[in-house]
Image (tube, rainbow, N blue to C red; front, side):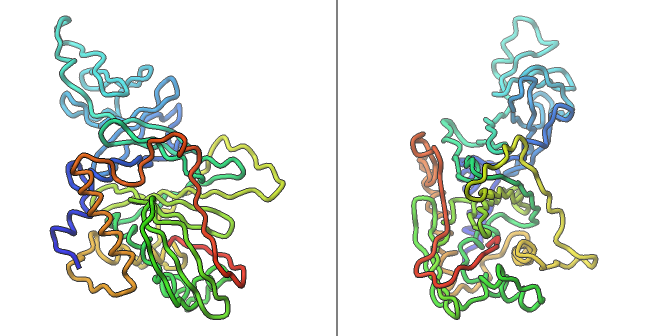
Length: 386
């Protein structure tokens, strides 16, 4: 269990908080590109307890600034896009993408006041139909070119899922190997919804272990029963990413904190084309919005892996009280994640780079992760958000 102070250190994500400063060292997805159009080129995005405005300039490039004008706090959402800049609708202050003031109407012509004020602004990059922002100090690391974002031999799909609890409850689940047996395999069996894919996780777990790696935490699981197998899963990518296969598909989940008690899960799914088939060129990556996992009575449906996970995370409370938990040997991965978080927060507090940042372009051509099995005796498919 954790002390209240340590629990707060690992869960609070606002500006100036220990974990918030750590998460700001990594590029975070803001929203799908298709949410900004020529007709509607502005979008409010609440992320890491900051209210931001993302906009598409007349040149087609994107900007990201604090929504409230530095002058008197009016929302720039109602402002005017002029070229690559945005002008406040209240008094006309005009900002470029870096937050510099280009014009300050009604101030003396010789005034240097505009050189003394900056609107908070963050760099934005587009990749694979998603907009990413870097909210930390300069110089920014490279935007990681994960394989699901840059592979050209298949097609992509984005899914957006709401989560009404702290981000760490979802990310700790990634370091929790054994939950898949009951929460997914057994749950589907008891509901009469078992399939070959769900039965993948309904095998006896005879051994599991974890180890640190350059990206975060590597996970191994040994299954017994009729289809024994030792599986090496893709690593937990520090600090807030899950990689998981789904049959032949590769999925990557970002657990993006909105504030301390709400999280936006953004999933990029990549489906490789069949051998010898040239996939269609995707000019637009489609987006699916998963709005609810509740039935008419307000209960979780628990009829899919996603809804089962959400039930487990949200019923822990808005911010899980880790002072009241009782961890066992099977929770080794969770303890390792918390230790890693605490250590990397301390690294940032010393002004140094945390792990899993990329600054070498040669290392960033494509970053690949795949699950593989050792001594696999029977081919099985898998589908999980675990």
